[in-house]
Image 1 (cartoon, rainbow, N blue to C red):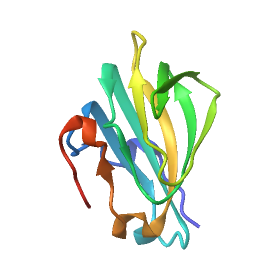
Image 2: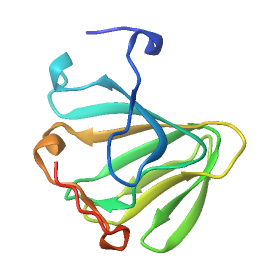
Image 3: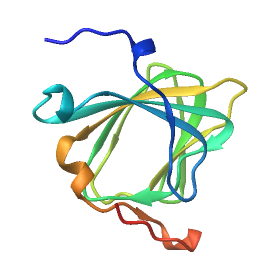
Length: 130
C-alpha cells in the first residue's frame, strides 16, 4: 500500500501540440506498483485547454473543481465538480476551461497507454505519436 499527499507529487506542463495552460501530476502508475491503471490529476488554467486528440484507450475522468466543457467530436458538454466522464477509445475529445478558476480533474488510463499512439486531430494540422 502507498499513501502520499498530492502536494508531494510534482506538477509538469502538458507537453503536447495543441495544449494551452495545462499541467499534469502523475499520482499513481506502474512505477508505483499499480498493475493496471495510472491516475493523473490535471489542472487547466482559465481559458486553457487540452489538445483535440484521440487514442486507442479509454479515459475515466472525475471533475474535482472548476467549470469547463469536454468536446466530444464537435459537440461540447458542460462539466463541473462532481461530474464523471467516460471517453471511449478512439473518440476525438478535448477538455476546455470556460470558468474564472482552474479546472481540475482526475483521469485514469490503462498503464499500457504509454506504448500506444496519441493523434492530434488533423484539423489542428499536427499529428503527434507517442
